Image 1 (tube, helix red, strand yellow):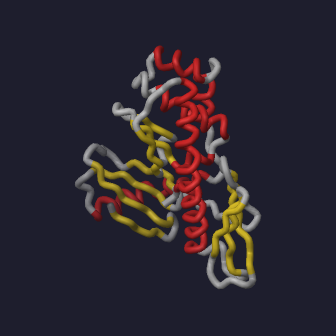
Image 2: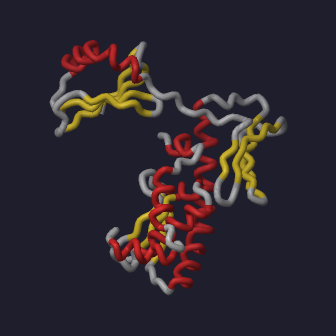
Length: 238
């Protein structure tokens, strides 16, 4: 992988791939990614870059969302927002009664990358704490209700899946699941619990999950797939 900077196009990440037969351009958060054939050399890339420049100009990097004083992240158990404080010299966190206040010095520039990073990491840290506090309890409650058994629960930072269940009946939940409304969190929990009985997504699985979801399993599945929390991209970006 090679990182470049172009005055017109901005940051470019070049990713060699053995299966690539041609150059593939993708728009990412904050940069352009070019996937190139594995043995692509610097001279070839410079030539192709100029050839593709007109098209790449239309793929300028997406601007990263910035979190400001007027913004709020709403989660299952808390709301997070920035609060200015003229008496502190470095950021401070406070979580009370479902409100996460990220206190920032009065004169600090929130747009600076280090401040945006601090805000992102602060919210993510509390998401993990709250996920560990609430999701195991919710899972245990549903398991008792439906007479299901599972081996253990882990909270991870998966960005591609809300949850998963292994053949050994170990359940994993992404901490970002906490960004969903409770009805969809409940669905994901019940979905993974159903996998402790039926590991695939066959008709027996959906029939079982329908029993848990009052006949709305497929409807809720579609809703989960389409749902993207407002600040999800901000929190998962590198």
